[in-house]
Length: 345
Image 1 (cartoon, rainbow, N blue to C red):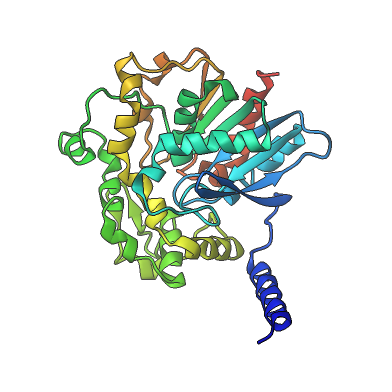
Image 2: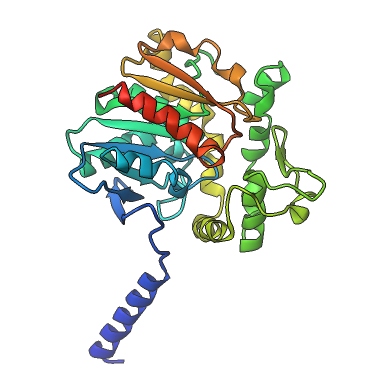
C-alpha cells in the first residue's frame, strides 16, 4: 500500500466512524467534546433563539443521560438561557477511567469547574441535578460556590457531611437508610460483568425506568435488582422505543463499570470532605431549590429532614411523581422550576 492509498483508507475510516455517531437528539442543538486533564468530557448544548441571558448546567444521575432533561431544556431556552448538559464520568462519550478516585465527587467537581471555565469563563451559572447529579450539585457548590448564581436538586437531598466514616452496610444494619440497601448490590464489582450486550443493557434500563411484568412485578426495588423478573418486564412508559435504543447505544460504549463506580467512592468522598466537616460543615449562601418526588421509593422524604439549617435561601417543593420526576411529571417539575427562576430575576 502506497502513501496515497493509506491516506484514502484513513479518511474513509474516519468518515465511517463519524457516520456511526448518533444524531444530536432534540431539544439539543449541538454536541461537543473537550479534554479536561486526562478525561474527555462530552456535552450537549441547547441555545435560545436570541443572545443567551445566562447559562444553566444540568447533571444527570444513574442510569441517566443528558436526554433525561428533554422536557426541561425547552423551558430554559424559552426563558432565554443556554443549557449545557454533560454526560457524566463513566457515561456515553465521556471518559470512563480505570482509577476509582477519578469518580470521586471532588475530582468531578474540579473537572466540571474547568469545563465551565472553557465554555463560559467568568460567568455565574444556574446549576441543577437529579439523582447522583443532585449530589454533584451540592459538592460543586461546596467546592466552587463562586461559580453559581443559584442551584437546584431534584430528588437528592443534601446530607450533612459526617466527621466519622461508617460503611453503608453497617448503617443499614443499624436501621439507618433502609431504602438505600440496593446500593450494596450496586457497589459489588461482580455486577460490572452482568450487563455486557444490548439485550442485557436493555433489560436493566427497563427495570430501572419502572418497567413492570403483566402481573405488576418490578425489576428494581430499594433492596436491589430482581434478575428473575427481567425477562418478563414490559416496555417502560418513561422511555419510548426510540429513546430506549438511544440509551442502549450509549451504554454499550463503556457498559456499567463506570456508572456503578459512583457507588464505590463513599470512603474517598468522606476523606476529601472531612476537613470541611471538621470545620463545622458547609452553609449554602446562594438561592437553592429542592424538589422532592413523593413517590420515589429510594430517595424518600425522610432523607431531607433537617437539611434546611444548612441553607440561607432554601425553597422546598414537592411533586407527585416517582424517581424520574423530570420525565414522569414534566409539567409539575417545570412549573416549580419556572416559579423559582422568577424569584432570581
